[in-house]
Length: 452
Image 1 (cartoon, helix red, strand yellow):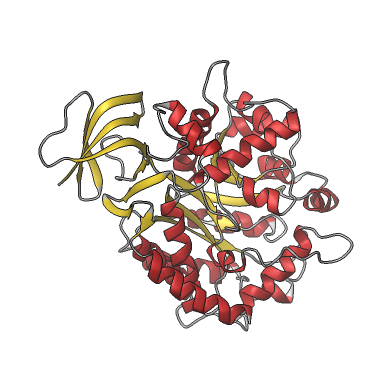
Image 2: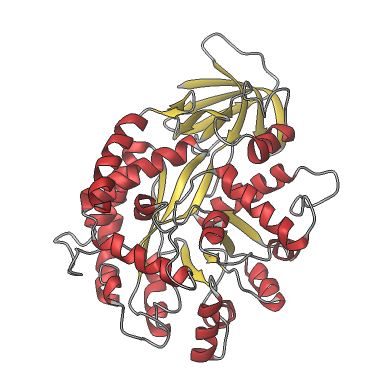
């Protein structure tokens, strides 16, 4: 048993002082507030629950920063995508494990303790399945196990190049499956994560442009009650192409034709009408927002204030992993709304409320729902995923409670996180993950070869 004592901790009921947390077998066994530290307690100042990055493409961490060269008179998501295809075509299974391991180390150092891996790099470089069709999924599981992060694996079904069943692009050949192949892949992926503590699995139909309606209906049962994630309405062109195909916008089509409910997570959903926002919020599905990537790719700004006003739930993801951090995603989310509405503290929810706290609470609850976690937070029964802040950081000096969260998200840049426990194991101490040096060395060697 591990015994931790925090001068202040954010519990489901709010901030509490002098909190003792008992951890057994990777889970929180007991939480007691208002008690003095006992002999043998490991003592820290400010504790928060770890958050989920509900949407990640791990392999893209290897190409971060490589697409900042203008690709012509207009540079868009669609030109970025060509570079992504070329990079993906060069990666071996070892490369995927190496890149994902560093990414997950960085996630843990930045306050993410679970990742939803939207995994679509399935096959060998010629597009043929590996002897073990889940070879790449097993490498993702390997990286999660090495780093200690909790994994929700979301194997992605990808069959077409665009709406209406168009033939896939040659650069997509490593992603493509038939429905029967995908069923085999799902069974093998379940096996690949079966011994990984805290892991679970769902499915990820890639998008309406990549999945035909009959295929979507055929693969949803393969989730077996687990989460269902899908990209939707990320780009204006995607919306226009969907209208040409179906006379419906992507989110509208999904709400009318798919069993969207609390198990679902619509990634991005950037370009939605007021009617779609209200209907989407009413389903209980989660909006999977990836503000740093959405800004990087020029996607647009999700109508977050309107969605929250309608009772919607959101979580955050790191998507392309061009920059990895809880604070970075939440700050970008709020700042995008400030630019859109030309106001401050847009997502705080009420006068006098902390914006950082509101963002954090939404991301904790929404991320847990999207990744099928029944219990999240510093509470008995939850996985022991805990983050402590460094009260010596200049942006946290003298801050307690919500002010500490605001200081971390909006002012601290790097260095605000002290320790992180993932599944009850301390994997980050003094801001450094125990595998940081080795993970960086191996990553650098792999990426030097890939870039060359």
